[in-house]
Amino acid sequence: MRITTSVTAGLLGASLLTAGAAAAAAPVAEAGGAHGSRTPCARTAALFCEDFESQPVGGASSLDWGVDTRHGTLRVERSGHAGKVLHVHTEGNGAAFLEVPDLAAPGNSFFGRVRVKVDDFPTAPDWAHFTLVEVAGAGSSEVVRPLGGQFAPTVGPDATFWGVGADGGPTGDWTSWQESAPTVEDRWQCVEFQWDAPENRVSLWFDGAAQPDLTVTTTDHGGAATDFVLPSADTVRVGWQLYQGGSTPDHFDVWLDDITFAAERVGCGR
Image (cartoon, rainbow, N blue to C red; front, side):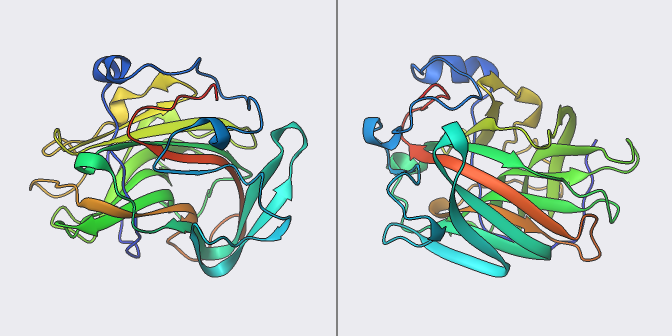
């Protein structure tokens, strides 16, 4: 089931392989949602990697990435065995993103991995739509959201589901959420995606398990009946944005860790 809503344009997209192709794409570490050793970036050859371990506790800033907020904040905090993490806080339909500029993915194809915990997902207004990752770049006006979701009141009073989406391009503003991918509150999950330019495809994994129902392609997506075309990714933003006002709850807290973009699949075990 796909619902189209009118939302503020965001920034970010990512493409993931389907289940079969993903398994063959690259060797990966043992999958799992739990945090492993606290130095994943030290052991990963990646286009970009941030595990926050070298960041001071407090307001987030770095020479390697930018901060984009509106009625929101980013703070580095300690979180038990998880080490240091990024705490994203927004009020109402605010936004707070860590922004990675000038991503140089070979052949415009890359994998993403992020560990995420969301305190509460929106249960009002109807069809409230949120984004955690978005990608933009040259060659297409689509702003692609490889990780986002939507509240679906026709399914239940607190039914929110993950989905890939886009805005700003010829396919319009859409989120291809699926009931096979319900969100989970207050628990760490490892989410992976692949931005697959040759196949013009975005695919997802949760805690190492492929979610083929969420895959979007040139002609199989949740927007208008026209081709969905990936831009040449050069800017990736990771954080939180809700696009409707009058939300329940009236604020949102999200924790992020081990943000990685790489030419090969990283997996969740490191």
